[in-house]
Image (cartoon, rainbow, N blue to C red):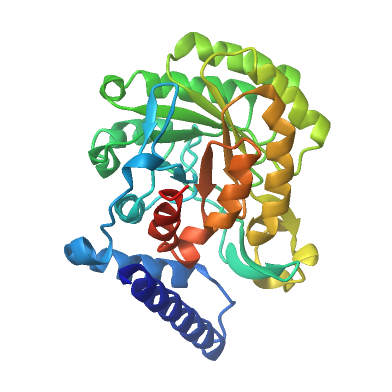
Length: 352
């Protein structure tokens, strides 16, 4: 009953706030921009943290735990790599996520693209979000230092560290930098290699070149002794996906995350030319689910643990993906639209 009440309250409030902000933007001759609405929503969620025992804390059923490569996930639901506000991520963990992945970090500090850079949109009659943030972040050196004080380590679950790169060597260098942090050795963590980001200059270098990817993965495995997830692109051809999976099958402690947002131009999304300062961005939301399912079916024969990501927001989808071979389930847009889907899905999982 508590889940139903807060779910309805959250969705209704978010809708009203978003419409109010859009109305204010039109009234003041500003461009439509979803970012202020997301930030306001984050502010409201964090303001209720003192009441989290009632508003956010939900028990995770004991029988839904998943263990992969000695990583113990409290629930198969994972917070995908897209959010930098750790207080919000901690709220989602309180709600019942089994794990969360830090926002992708690059070697150097990045301010990201100019605004507007994120919008809500519809694609194939399904509501979603198009993101052209451009991976703003502090850079690996500052990020590594900040890891020691992260509140996410307070949770008894694996935490993912997502690594990006504009070149093959940058991926290796970024991991070398992070592995110098001795604090990590005491924690339950894994890396995620984001080889499919539509928001970098050349962020799909490895995704589109399996041979280079193999070389980089070999170099990284000489450095680390923790699991690594490979985040592939749903925009890749099925042949490329099979080649990447085949390479992964020859390495130890490798998962595959299928997958990422799909690159769409503004014209493909039928949104105004001034809605983004870039040509296009990464589309996320329910419309991605069919491709996620297709990719999971492609990967299943390789017997590599699969994280299914893309378009997931309910238990029925997870049940379908699980039957096809997925072990973990990444969520992003669903957490923005209604994070109370987390305890709802967990409560259904306990009956499976």
